[in-house]
Image 1 (cartoon, rainbow, N blue to C red):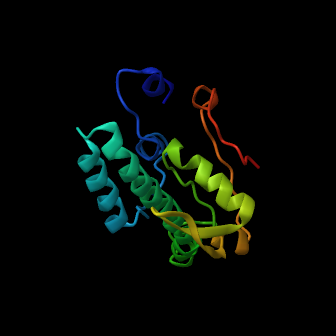
Image 2: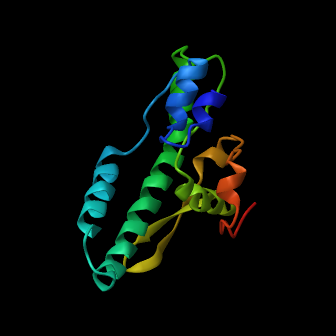
Length: 157
């Protein structure tokens, strides 16, 4: 695994690396519709001017927050389903996600709430309690030190 991580010439996907190195079970929890909306939005931003992108970036941020919150809310149900079906020996999981989502995840945990985000306003409703906290799950964020240097994760726990 260290050889793979030391190769900076290619991208390494964390979940694939864990699967190849430790034969860990993988399950996709992404909301496919939101994923495709973000993908299409990114394609639409390509080649646009800075002024055109400014309002569209608000929409992208909103979509990303929705993606993150949906995945976070799904985790306990998926973990418990795997445990109840005998696919895992305990109610534990490793959730791999891009570093760009870390600030939102920290905020959700700190507030123990997931708010509804819309592009035209910062927060539209108070939101619901974070299922992970409600169900007693512990959360640990593991990030490479190099990625944390200069990162603005205000609101850290």
